Image (tube, rainbow, N blue to C red):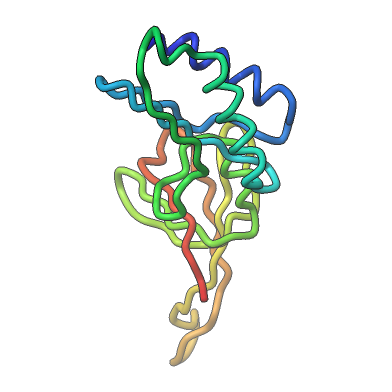
Length: 153
């Protein structure tokens, strides 16, 4: 199966809805095509069906047999694209870098980095007891090893 041909078909389908974007495309050796798409405002089932039909109708099963799956990213999987970070502003993220882990609310994201914010209890500068302080960290995308959205019930 030609990955470039499949990618072109996906891009053609995504061009009809600017809020959607390709997260991942995987074609296994036995021609199982797995397409993962996301959207700035989520992805309705009807869009997954439309993308699937666009790809399926343009490929010839007589020429090469295949299976096709179009889905949205699993919440348990790490974020892959900068656009996914922007979509998840104001959500709690768990972010791992080579040196440490952070957990906080994503308050900003751009093409270069993200900003996390959280509250922490620290000893008072003078006297006994603790005080709650707001912490903020800016992390460059190249330093992020993994980032996942934390599910809060």
